Image 1 (tube, helix red, strand yellow):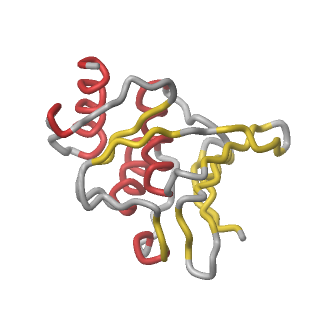
Image 2: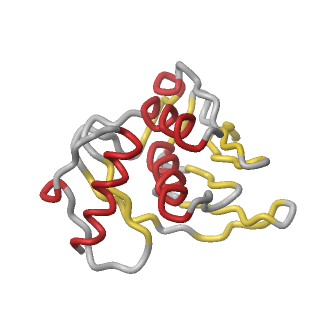
Length: 153
């Protein structure tokens, strides 16, 4: 557990210049991917880190305003288990869906995977835990090593 916390501390220091302390994090002994979101982290911060660190993302200056509803927010530090399942295939690329994942969590999940593995996790992740205006769900899409966010109904 200590190594996991140290890895998250290094991630947030390297990608966000944030100081995160081990006592802020709580990880359960569960199978699956768990992500840590520090208090106050915004979509715009995640988008900027993606652009700076992966040279792959065009930042929308209105990212935080484009979202009308989230299952969770970064009002407090939290850890989230990401239960991802394969929904289908799109041109031989797996499409992952998590009913619990928000757009912020999805962006951090992709960025963290890039930080640890040197590549993005999947070509498409549907973030059903977030709604844009008009009831649309954001989808994190990777095309030619470039990450973007699209909204679908």
